[in-house]
Image 1 (cartoon, rainbow, N blue to C red):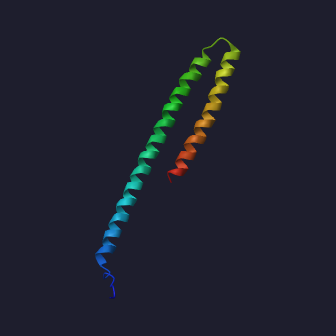
Image 2: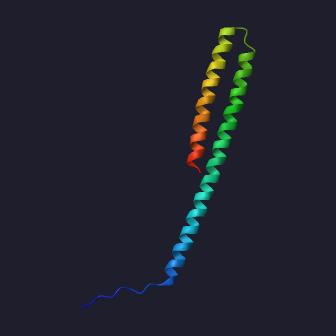
Image 3: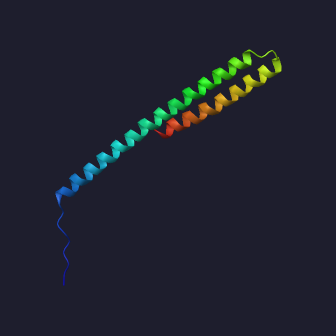
Amino acid sequence: MATTLPKYDSTMDSIFDRATEASDQVLAAYRKVGNAWVDSYEKAFDRTLEFELKLAGSSKQDWLKGLIETQAEYAREIVNTYTSTARSFLK
């Protein structure tokens, strides 16, 4: 008894094309949302850092001002690395 394979149907191509297109649209939406989140995170961090540096500037203790400024610089480097890495994954 010979088995026959089902005939190739061109509707399968259209189904595959629609599924691929839908997948591409979902990935584009995820990238857009991801980039918006990274931008928001970076802006919120910058505002927090500005406030911290403003407080440091009002300190009368030079050592405390220097400590806060150094910590802020270090934190900024970490966040910049994090956000640039996140953006590279979202491309």
